[in-house]
Image 1 (cartoon, rainbow, N blue to C red):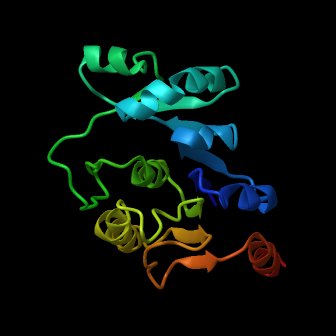
Image 2: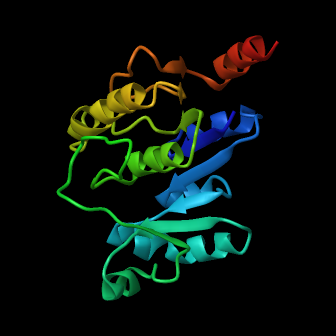
Length: 195
């Protein structure tokens, strides 16, 4: 089994990270770098690059693989990510449509982390801190317009992958996704599965 943790920096992430004991690769983006030393760090939008590039390079010293989108050389320099380890080429218009054979084009880091793990052979994908924007936040509509349909598509496109969601999402989860609402529930149910 190849387990990946897709970690975001929500207030609930740290509690789950404390109880998840299984061996797993981890990927995070933006402020998630302050929660753990990930195996892979995804950074691409200009604001986040300015804020977190120095932390990304510091994490590389401890083995973190740094990933960003391929852009022209000056755009990479301007963002401070021109010396990253991997550059993902994306073609086409921004789309919420997934494809198993290629990278889909987005404007959000969160689903890029899911996609990275899936393209790297995840057989178990654990979402930690991936609740999305809360109701009342002007960005909440992105949960329904992007995160919800992308996750539904991922479950259909990668039926061999076990999807686990830790926390209370602000979007609907497909029925196939196992959900643990609290860290204690995760521990109790995962111990039952392992025994």
